[in-house]
Each structure stands twice: as C-alpha cells, then as structure tokens.
Image (cartoon, rainbow, N blue to C red; front, side, top):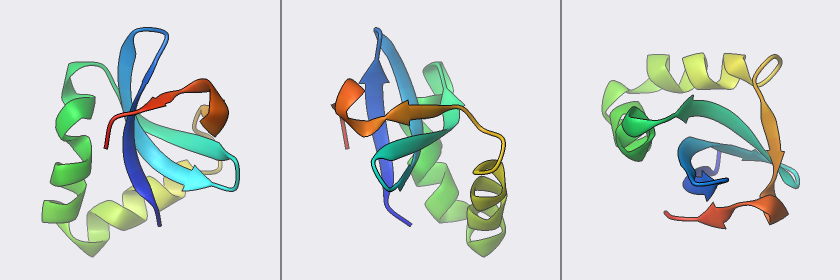
Length: 68
C-alpha cells in the first residue's frame, strides 16, 4: 500500500494509491497527520483504510500536488 498526503483544490487529503488514482481516506485538518496515525495504529488501521477502497472518493493522481 502506497500511502500519501496531498493537496487538491486547496484542501489537504490523505489516502493510498490504486493504479493512477488516489483512494481518499481522510480530508481536512486531520489529514495532515492521518498517515502517521495509520502507521501508529498498526494492521487494524491499515485494514480500515483498505476497506474504504470500495466506496471512498477517488481522485486522479495527476490532479493533486503530493505533499508526502
């Protein structure tokens, strides 16, 4: 799973890469720390994010500015 934080339309988001898209798992003020929280949360947190893949918002990777 490739994790990232990004900026899209002036908003911060966090999620993971699926092909040429980003699965958005967090947005807003908490998104800047979401990847760190995910890593600290361990496998249960990773499973929660992976489960969001089916229904979460998707954004084209080319449409965002990568932050980390």
